[in-house]
Amino acid sequence: MKANPDVIAQAATNWRKHQWPAVEAMQAATSITRAHQLLVGRIDAVLAPLALNFSRFEVLALLFFTKTGQMPLGKIGDRLQVHPASVTNTVTRLTKDGFVKRVAHPSDGRTTLAVLTVKGRHRVEKAAAVLGEIQFGVSGLKQPAAREVTEAIAGLRQAAGDFD
Image 1 (cartoon, rainbow, N blue to C red):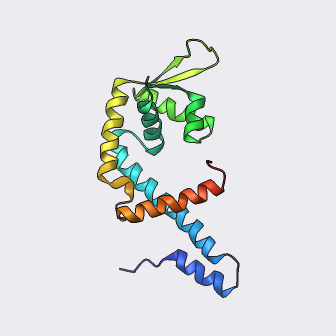
Image 2: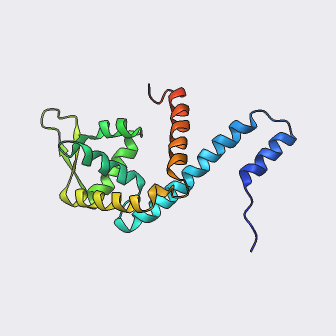
Image 3: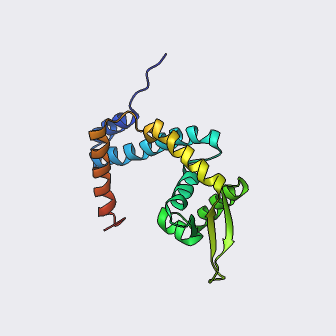
């Protein structure tokens, strides 16, 4: 069986060989992108038997954490930092599966609320337990390293204006 080389390290060697700039930055950006792909793949794999993926889980969790179990679709997009079309698609799938229902806002006819159903509440709790079992896919990182990664990426996000 052929060993898998670290293609990001190989890319860095090529960047240095050709004297391209920002080798370490390229490695960091590429590593973060690849880690994202790996994590979403692991998370989606364990959520699939629950008829969920990470996006659907995020919406259910967001609704679960509200006092009333409901939120306007636009606010869901704002909180999860996703495009309104993505929210609509995700809520449509959750509605078809009976985890969420759409309800007209009682005082704003232009607004639709996503409301967590009892089935959705049970499903998100089960999904959270499953994700806890796999440590959200980062089981290869010990607690101090996980905190360090979080802090380093928070610095990147803050510098990019993601939060104050």
